[in-house]
Image: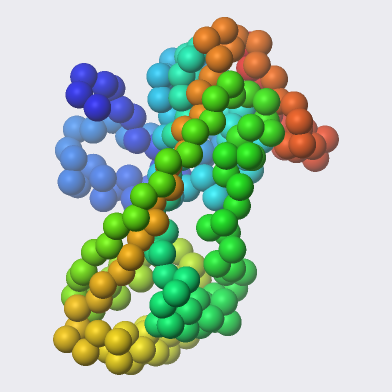
Length: 218
């Protein structure tokens, strides 16, 4: 985005530290995706990359709408492994569901677009998807696995999980080069041009009754 002022936000000081190491001088903020530290109507675009599944949709959608200017857009995207037909990926998912507390592969299949429509905040919600693949050495693939929160959640049995992964992958990729297919999903929701009085309504408005403390959008 040439000419745009971009402010990264993350709840992890460690992640922001890595960002500042690689991009010195960048203005980054530690904050929660459900409580953005910005004034009302200051942004043209709010993005959540590989993160929207962590938030409560009524809260985060209202917060994004609060900081967006009229006609602004909320963009969500994920790069998920497209491995439903791959036996090695199926074995990996079975191990994760058995060893990582609370992990379920189904989190990837939520109706993201519908959830945004149900808030009543957006006049247009569009989904675009595509497929691609990459090939990388086994050691780099393992490093990528370690970066995942649900893999780290395995805890004391992490090395057992990784050992099983190495054996499984080397049977499929004996040269040690792992080819992994991906499915990228982008969801873009746009505010109406006269959105100053937007309010949450519809099925997800139940979040209000649950005491989620939605910010007021004026």
